Image (cartoon, rainbow, N blue to C red):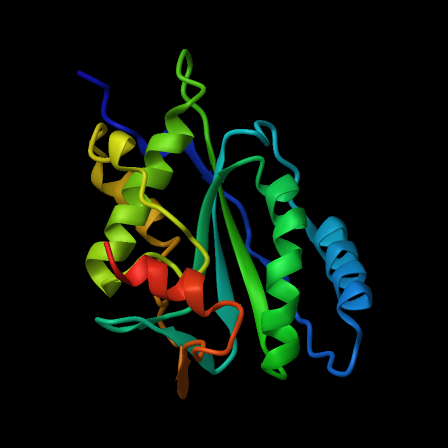
Length: 196
């Protein structure tokens, strides 16, 4: 039986916020700007390949999911910086479409001696927790990780840190909940996560 995940095995870094706020730019220029902002503000990581991260909208706009709204648009694992650097390709069209929208990346570094893959199980449990709470996968996730779900248990302090990755957050005041229309290139990924 796997050992309980402890709070001491998790390092939650300060969020990386990309205040975009540009409009009228060509996507290639917007992508370059966003990558520069990410590079300049990324936290120092000791185990950079062993991360779980969430990408969230910042501002008055959240995403409309079947059970409620949430700012979370993606949950991922692995080399967070490298993966987000590539995610800019789909983040930029969203930010250019919704003026004054920004993103925030929350990075959770996972370290357990003799288990360098623990982070992948945490991602699976986070995806399941998100789906159970909001009725869908985050907008840009394509699949659940069923084979890794529920393998580990968490001490209460560890669970609290992990769930902070997907919580709406106190003091958040969303006045819009969006979803892509049928003629949007991002409709298929959004809709796919709703139907299990």
